[in-house]
Image (cartoon, rainbow, N blue to C red; front, side, top):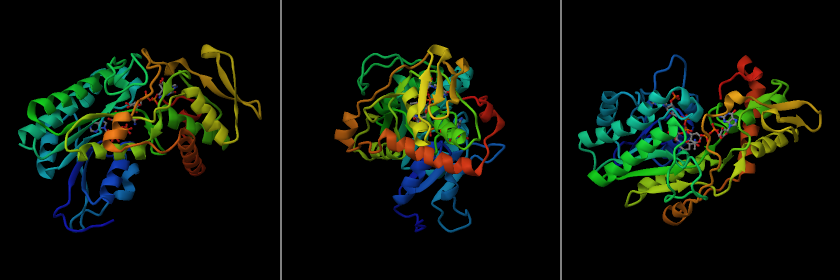
Length: 367
Ligand code: NDP
Ligand code: GDR
């Protein structure tokens, strides 16, 4: 890592730096020569596994990767961190990002994901940084919710279907409002699902690739899932963080969809992942009775657990990334098959080292 002088280097502040996207974005910005500050929550256990490789001894001269304790629910903390770091760019990636969990923690989700974005924007304004600091908001395809039109683009109406999506809707519009009211360079990336070997273990793709690896290695018997018919537009996280950066390099702020333009069902993701470990799936039954069997051994490996159904579901997401293609020069590159192959390969390596927890083995892990 280049540890040259601070002078003339751009300074970025990333909230949610310990998450999937935060890790990829921090790595990319460091490669580009930025000084990267990250907001990290206090936790009773280590929560920095995704960014361990970026860690720098804080005692070296001119460190370029600096973590600050903080929380999106704490205004004074956010103001102080922004005042101290004087960032050229803020990437607001922090969120309670699990849609199903948001039904159980709706008020907290609104506070962290909705009001949290407002706190950052107000901090920029109060500190007189509206002309200096550019702002990226992690908006989401969940805003589209109940299908209004396909494919979904920047002009498709929103219809949120969860407390998470409703909180993100507030964040989206407060970003637009601060842009219009105060002339801030503030942009929304409306990102469709993006995955990677760093994806949280309770999101469906990683849950599936981990289970395929564990069942293949004899460490787990069965995978329990909810709605197999939901369709998502899945891309690779590493490519999507580049799109975030591109948005902040434009002369004018704006709102952009990042997506692959393809959609696949959860069932089809299961097929692809288990095929990668030599276990093609034979689906039998329907509804909650549907089960997936390994065609070769006849063993049942996938079952439905209604606990994973959501009170309101987003049935179909497929994005139209034309604006990002034409204005940002951004395009996804990794196919879904390549993405699944990479995730399964990495999970096989992880599983070969660690026996999964009892909860995961029995299917109790809340996901
Ligand atoms: P992750 O869940 O992997 O990461 C979320 C990050 O936010 C973690 O660093 C987490 O910290 C942090 N965080 C959560 N709550 C707080 C809080 N109250 N204060 C400070 N930090 C907090 O999400 P992703 O990396 O996948 O997603 C990044 C952002 O993009 C999120 O806002 C998400 O909603 C949004 N998004 C994601 C998409 C995707 O497909 N991945 C698609 C569209 C939008 P900790 O590690 O301590 O839990
Ligand atoms: P999503 O991702 O809700 O799209 O939000 P998730 O992977 O959780 O669900 C995708 C679809 O799979 C169905 N599903 C299951 N989901 C989970 N988690 N666990 C299961 O066992 C299961 N079985 C079926 C879900 O019902 C859903 O239809 C993600 C998050 O990263 C958000 O933060 C982000 O905004 C959106 O993507 C875009």
